[in-house]
Length: 406
Image (cartoon, rainbow, N blue to C red; front, top):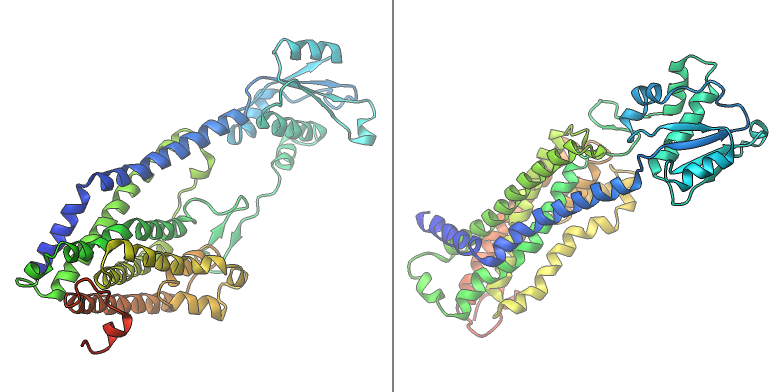
C-alpha cells in the first residue's frame, strides 16, 4: 500500500505544478467572474433612474399616490425606483424629454376608459424598470378608491409556489432557485472535470510506455498498485479543481448578493439531493477515469487514446438528449433504468432532482452499481497494463484484453 500512495502522490504532484494545470485552475474562476460581472453590467444597462412623465387627459391620476408611498411598499423589492412627474400638456412633457429631464412620458387620452390606449413617447428606449413601474403605477392609481393594501396586492400579481406532498420540494413561481439547481450544477461540474481530466488520464500510462520506463517501475511495484495509484492521483487532481472552483463560486455568489442580483437571494439547499448527487458523482468519476486509464494502457500513443475518450463524455450526456421522455414522468421505467445504469445515472438523477424526490433505494442501488463498476474498471486497467507491457509498439485489442494473451 505504501507504493500505491507514493505513485498517487507522484502523479498528483507532477500534474498540479504544470503551467497547463494552473491555467486550467484559473480559467474557470476568471470565466465565472467575467460572467457575473457581465450579467450585472448588462442588468444595470436595462434600468434607467431618470424620472418618468405622464400627461393625464383621462383624469386617472386626479389624486395620485406619491412616489415614496409606492417605493416603500412595492418598488424597493423589485427595481431601482423612478419618480413620476405629471405634466399639464404634451408640449411641456416633450420639452422636458428633449432636455433630458425625463427618459419617457406617457399620454392617457380622454377616451382612455373606453379604449385603454396609452401612448409612449421617448427619444431613446426607456429602462425596463421605468416601463414595469409605470404599468403598476397605473394599476395602483386605478384602484385608488380601494384601500392601499388591496391596490398594492393587485399590482404585485400572483405568486404561486409548487410544493410536493411531503413538503421537501418547493419551486417558486419565478422558477427554480439557485439552491434547487445545485444538484444539476454539481453534475455539470463533474462532467467538466471528466473532460478536463482526459488528457492527464490518457497520458498517465502512455508516457511511461513511450519512454520505456515501465520496465523499471514494475520491478518495484505491482501493476495493480501502479495503476490504482495513478487513478487515485488523477481523481485527487479532479477533486482539487472542484474544491478550488467551489471556493471561487461561493465568493462570487456572496459578491453577487451584495450587488443585489436577485437570483442569488434564496440560497436554501436540498441537502439530500446534493448528497445523493455527490454519492453517485464520485464513483462515476472514478469509473470513467479508470476506463480512460485502461485505454491509455492499451494504445501505443496518447493521441490515439484522445479519439476514444470523447465516447465517455457523450455517454454521460446521453440522458440530456432524451430528457423529454422522462421530464413529464420522472418516475417512468426509462427514468429509473437510466438512473441505475453506469454513465447515464449521474445526469439522469441530477435532472430528476429538479422535478421530484428520487427514491432512496434508487440512489443506493445506483451508488452500489457505480462502485462495483469502478472497482471492475480498476481491475480492467491493471490487466490492460500487464498485457500492454508485453506489446510495445502494438495496440492491445479488446479481444486480447479479455482473452488469453499469446
